[in-house]
Length: 338
Image (cartoon, rainbow, N blue to C red; front, top):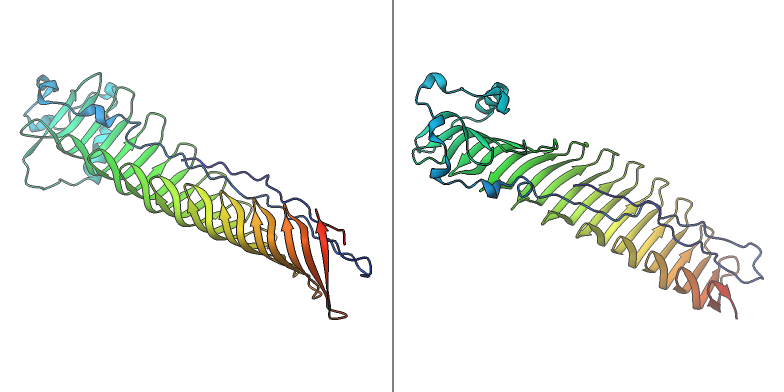
């Protein structure tokens, strides 16, 4: 469920050339897009890693010699097998009886297969049903409800590497609301469907970055808000974990871009403003000004014309506020040639 944030993107420096008869020459400061990202949310399948599908045991696979009908043995366990009294206390403290009309019986710890262990409730047909604890040979552990040998309703899965999913289940898969906590401090809180993030959720990383918004099929998709630890903020559309569609990006120094994005880059129509009053509105491609656009200075001067690869290209017109004149010129790679 990690995120790799790239902070090395930079728009090429652009010099806005003006005719030599102007008294003052203006230059644009570099537009340092140092916080654009390639979002990577590699959410591991909660249950596919845990091998739940390998745990569908038939009645004849259960060692009935470990059963006891004596209620005094209802909490009988083997501490060395790592289903502990603490686990059992947690189970019965946090999960009330299902009370679904199915008769169940609590039995002591039993070996199932390949070194896996189960402690808890069974129905009269020998299926895990009700409250129970499953411990796999790889030391992953599930504590919660079972229905017909499958994790259902609510439960906590503790993976061998320390990752924890605590939430709702449907037939051995995370479904509904749940919290997935990684041992490195990464956490996702929100909704799941078929073992993947689906719907509204919030993800935080140990470095202070966070995302809150929509998920589809385990990916950030729809409307969301990503906040970086340096104070940068993007709010808008995502597609397959990428910034894509319409959105607004605010830098820590208050520069703002609002417009369309493609694959984490400014692409299409947009408006870029600077704290000192400068403004560009027009086309972008691959993070650079491209197509027709208008650049305005705080003193009222304007450039209206075409751009390519971040530089003036083709015909463009300057407006001089002091004389109220408009003059057209031809540009090539940011230089006036006519």
